[in-house]
Amino acid sequence: MQVQSMNFKARAGEKLADQRLQNNLKKLSTKFVSARATAIREIDFEATRAALKERRNRALENLDVWLEQFETQAAQRGTTVLYAETTADAARLVAEIAQRHGVRKVIKSKSMVTEEMRLNQVLAEMGVQSVETDLGEYILQINDNEPPSHIIAPVVHKDKDEIADLFARVHRKPRLTDISEMTREARDTLRPEFLSADMGVTGGNFVIAETGSVAIVTNEGNEGMCTVMPRVHVAVTGIEKVLPTLEDLATVIRLLPRSATGQSISNYLSLLTGPRAPGERDGPEHMYIVLVDGGRSGLLGGEFQEMLRCIRCGACMNHCPVYQKIGGHAYGWVYPGPMGSVLTPSYTGIENALDLPQAATLCGECNRVCPASIPLSDLLRKLREKQMERGLRPWQERLGLKLWAYMALRPSLYALATRLAAWTLKRMGGDQGRIARMPLGKGWSATRDMPAPKGGTFREQYREYRRSNQER
Image (cartoon, rainbow, N blue to C red; front, side):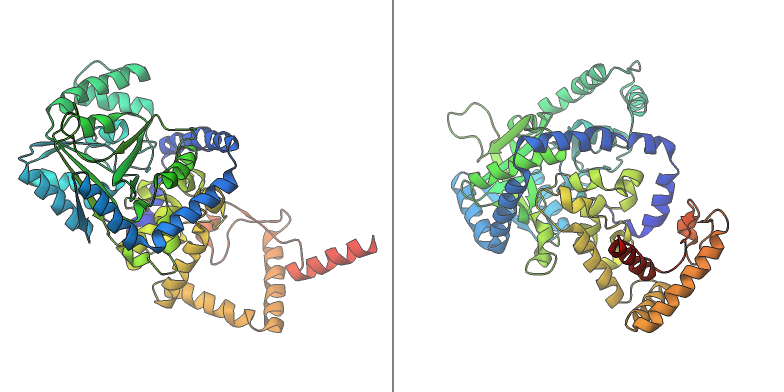
């Protein structure tokens, strides 16, 4: 997926004007947010996420050690482990595997890392058909290879009628509107693909150093068909997804489905260890695991290392007031929402995603719900600081902040300026006490009025408040 994050403002404006999208995105609060609130009450959420944070930190602090142990254990069980420095290298490795085994058709389960790799396009260029089998990803693929809008629910931005029209057009069958009938139609369409594929490609939610296993969490069971039916299975995941032990995985799984979809446990949890052994009746003849760096190692040991704890649950975007209004496509790359606003500039270069660190209210809701206790709003603030340090923000913004800093360091000047501003804004509000057009803030006041101050600066009003309380 090509990085288009530089177009964030224009895309966000389009999404805000799309009333159908606005209606579809209400599913986030009516489904995911409310379901999560119920599911986390089943456990001691704070204690569990503290344990998850500790276990993920332990893995990241000795990442090379755990990766080496994982590779050793996986190799002993017949799995070939490959490393890719870049996403392009990863796509090349998967393409070489396909070529080595004479693969003509690949079936895939949902994987955001393969979106980073542009794997479907790479395979298509070498004449290999790649079929998405996650229902949401399948819908997007047959809709002109549209990118996902959400990492857990890739088609959350579409409604049932849009999908019904798409199925009728692509499948050339009578239009259905009953959800169970529509899923049956998709299943009937995909079943021949499962039976005729040469290679299955999956993501990997985690890899386990203790056993050399890859853990895959889904709700549809398609990952089982992708890993059991074809003669070759390739799992692709990031290097940061290693966990030392199965006990660590158990801790993560208590939080992943609850944070993602509000389920106590996902419908399917596959723990895959090696290819089919002699005497076993199913499983692939060959198993590969491609571990992708793609910018991840650049975060190790730095001020953004905490982002590598992310377990890709999507809770931050489900609760984000910005994502809830614009959806995922506005962010312009694989990862949307608060997590994407940190990951995209970190992986692709801060100069390629100038607006994303600004695409947040810093309300802290993402921090509150993150099961890995990632301080997302703090990381976004740090990215803003880096943009200022490198002179990447518009000159007007940099000048304005320099003027504010100059006054803030001089209390008497700051007090005078704020008194003048409060006096001016009060008169601009008129009798109604509301400002329809804000100087230097046209973008903000274009869609809302600002309440005018009632008089006096904040410090003056606070002194009066304390005085009145003391007199009581």
